[in-house]
Image (cartoon, rainbow, N blue to C red; front, side, top):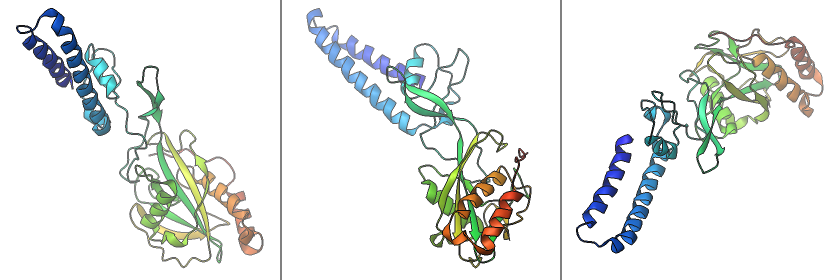
Length: 289
């Protein structure tokens, strides 16, 4: 990056020097101004291309100080103190990959502009989705047993990290199918809320958007896959505890939402949902790796 900036400066100086033996002083000013404008356009084009193409890890090895700090800022990098490391914003909306292999945490993001057009830097959380699927015929909730840390071996809602530029509803449906083999086309998912209390994920700052759905029966061809070591239906009235992460709170909120559905207003399901809500009262325990 520093070399590119140096080359642009050297190109300008060489072009100006080439005109000196042949031009009078009065003739040089318009040409110099035109050359400056052309070089500025070339530099801007390069900067725009780098801003679109570079990832944070691509520039993490560079320290930017002095004259190069302006160039680094133009491509979205933050110039540190002397001897520091450049911090470059991740592209807006970047996802965190699959649940098992992701490394969530606070990533620099771009949100708005500072005076003068420089990007404003803010930390941002990782984004996940979770789905609470309840079968009306047997008053059961579908849970998966986590195959990988954190919360390995604990029961949890099917879910995972949202891919870059992936709609939330589509992410929830995809994770449901990947971990339980359930065809999401027959599952009407509705958004319950967002959950992002500190400490909910030991890997870092993470916010989950939760969904719930009421299905007619447990006959959905459930089979564990992907990040799930197992996938089973459990009694709504007495879900297994402790659930992974803050899924105790998420399941309780999902039960409360489903209890408002006309299909769940009477009979066995309404009673089971009410008992499940009572069983899930209290705070969740911060998970460990």
